[in-house]
Length: 92
Image 1 (cartoon, rainbow, N blue to C red):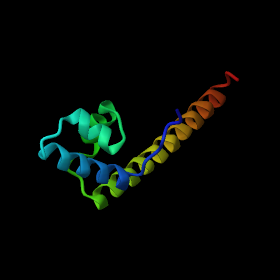
Image 2 (tube, one colour):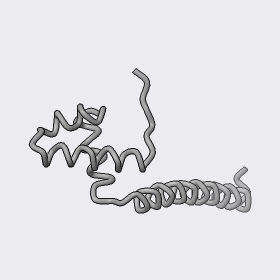
Image 3 (tube, rainbow, N blue to C red):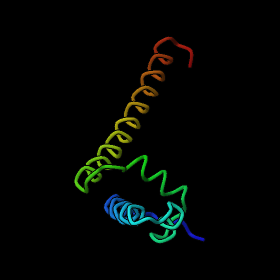
Image 4 (cartoon, one colour):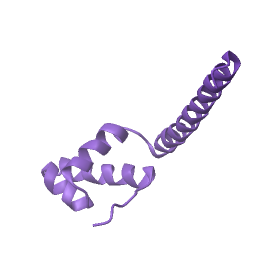
């Protein structure tokens, strides 16, 4: 089965729906099945997005993308620095 990628807004909406079902007396397994995910996904989403509002979830994803971009830039700069240091020492 193909893996579905859900947006942060969809995840927050599904978590809210699951919380409503759980407060109505359903088990976590039943609530997860009702929103169309596994229990493992439900608990992972709750850990990552639990208690967030839609705008906060959007901002979280935006910050994660920005962080990944900065990490790649830092790795590239570190590699360039090492190459220049090796070239300057004459060990090329």
